[in-house]
Length: 176
Image: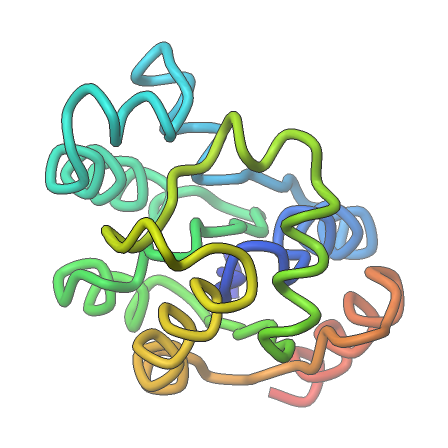
């Protein structure tokens, strides 16, 4: 195994866990959303606003393709990175995929508590009446089957520290 991918809904802790796990393994950690923003020269919210979601997904797919070639790297993927079949197919051969799970209430609370979330991340539904928990519940319900299909492992991230989650993932990988 030369790389590992973390998937899950925004706010589940992928980026933080990626850093902790990479430290534990002596690897690098990369966040695909950071890479996309760097490549585009603007925030994901601005990409959605200026260019639309299809253009964002095209950019995301290209970034994920590049990240699939990295060695000794834990990659935190954006919450919607697995929406495209081509990306799921790449991940299936590139390395183990770990899904960090948490209930919608936890995710909504984490997102609302993150001061940078609103400026960096777009709303994920076109319905203006859906905000906070309602939006998370709607989008999570649609994505959970895709996360489940994509993942080699799932790890509960609810109420657990990033260090404990990283330790569990390291244990799963050791037994693989």
